[in-house]
Length: 118
Length: 111
Image: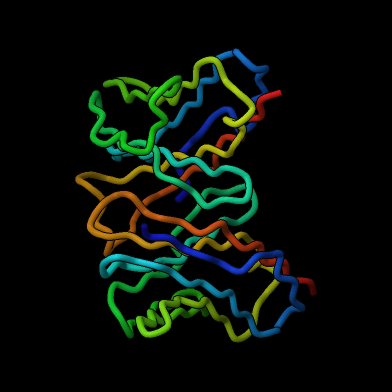
């Protein structure tokens, strides 16, 4: 899974500030997924993007959260006006192409970005 | 809805001990089941998978059998090593990209 790069690894924000988390997929991968792990919970799907397109954002909170994957550059998960409940580990994953078929389960994850909101 | 439940950690073992990490699931359909592992300082990586009932997934000495009758997918290894120390995640998924994960179980192996 080496190759999915997330930064920053750790981010501290005060309530009301903005948080930006970046994810560079593995070389040759054009599909990116964001998952969130709240304390004491499992990873939960947030959003699935291809280059310049949001394919599925059914797991994204309706307000304050947005994601993009531009033609050039990393995917960005943006959280506006952060609150303490946003404190979590945010994981990015990538796949080479097409929707990931569950019988392959070939998602390649980054190390995660841990957001702490004071 | 669908969900995955894992035993709480940490699981602490001596080297060469037998390992079992329990995982049970609830599902409305017939998902595939997975174990992912996260070693210190690395991202999650697929350890093994099983796509239908009675299938056994195996890799690196780890095994798990898809038990429909008990809705379980317990992870086992006969003799753990210090290098197996990591966090292990059980997950399920259908023909989509939305994997459903358990909370993770930390394994600590001491020499």
